[in-house]
Length: 305
Image: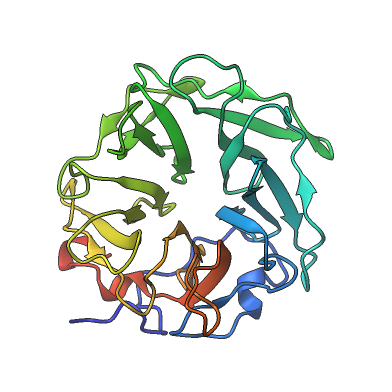
């Protein structure tokens, strides 16, 4: 079986660059086929429940969720100076609501996220804020025509503005991934991704490549699963999606593996995991990891450029 973790990026799968000068955070990382902690002590901090990573394409802004026991989820951002991350700054959102799953647009000027803002039925909905000087605008809902019932989460955008997100009907664990094309100031009616991506089980945490070449997502209870949840990749091919490929024991663990984000140059997968970090074997909720990746190594011929 071809390995996904070849360190050389294949010709034709080069980076989607923002044109900014200076080093990105991932320019400072060493290639590795074994997951390593992502910026320990400054981004990934022991004892902090941290998940849902996203970054602008130039790497200058990172966003993620923090939560904990009796701590409603909230979103923080961290700025990259070219050599290090500055301390995290909490996004100024209603502290009475729960906020999660931030997604930064390519230029870092807008953040989409999931929140219980506004109350109402269905739990989480998708919201957004835009850059307003040195701060952020008042949040407003993401307009989706005929959006599916249930909680929505983990938004992810392509370069042309197509939206991917997950939705879980109330009272179930059957989360599915949806795709919605841009329409006016919002999005057209979404379509549920068909099999083999969707199943009668849980598929969530979608990360869509900016060029919509591949989708990385978390799934529960699949035959290949090694732990609580595992990461899979599927490629867009001939208008459909290929059979999801399990990312293997190099990436997946006995714990919860999720929150995938692939750097725009296709060199690293950044994700969160509860895998044990010491000899006790106890799960550690959650640390941020990075590992070298070459998506083209698993791409079928029909998905290659």
